[in-house]
Structures are given as structure tokens and as C-alpha cells.
Length: 131
Image 1: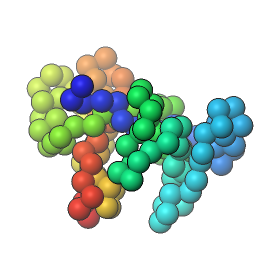
Image 2: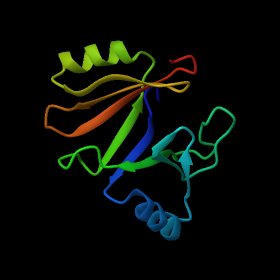
Image 3: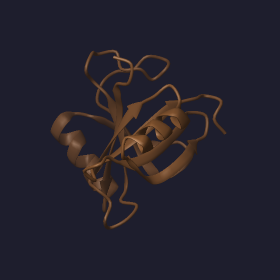
Image 4: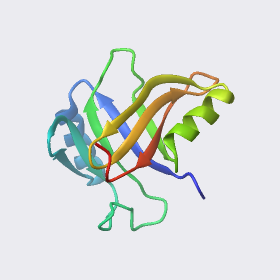
């Protein structure tokens, strides 16, 4: 499949407490993201050196402080080859941009949209040269 679900984020009022919950419930590995005090990396499956899940069907994600009281509880990220191209195509199909293109330095680019029914989702373009 060309555009797999590749990442999830769970928003929380108490990210550390929620991290403890999921670690205790599912034995997920949760660690602070280097250089970002607001983000915890969640590992639900083992990954290779390029952070690709080794087990079929499994993805990893993150837990972060809820950015807005009206923010949805979970955002799913879909990997795309070209973020700009996917944003253009999504707009033509009726999606609305909630958060425009942003960089995650050294990792890639993302944007958050809502589908025509108002459901949020995100697009992710891996790019180790992103700055």
C-alpha cells in the first residue's frame, strides 16, 4: 500500500500520567523526545534503524500535551511521498487544513487536516534533511 497509516498521537491534559497508563496496560515503551519537553515517543513495536516497524500492521506514535481544549483526542498520520501534493489533492477532495505544513527538524514535514465530515487526520512526509 502506497500511503500507510504510519503514526498516531494521543493528546492528554497529563501526558506523563497517560504515558504511565499505556505503559502499564500494553507494555508500550514511552520516552521523552530529545529536544522537545512536550512530546513523548511511544514505541508499540520494535523498529529498525530507519524507525520503520519490524512487525507487520504495527505503528508507533506519541503522547503530547493537548494543544487546544477543543483538540480531538487522537490524530492518525498517513505517510505521503509529497506533502505539498497531498495537501493540494486533499483540498480538491473537500478536506480543510487545520494546521499548515510544519517541520519536525531532521525527521520530516506534517500538516493536520479534517476530512469532508470534519474528522481530523494528519499527513506525514519523512525527510531527514528537513530543517
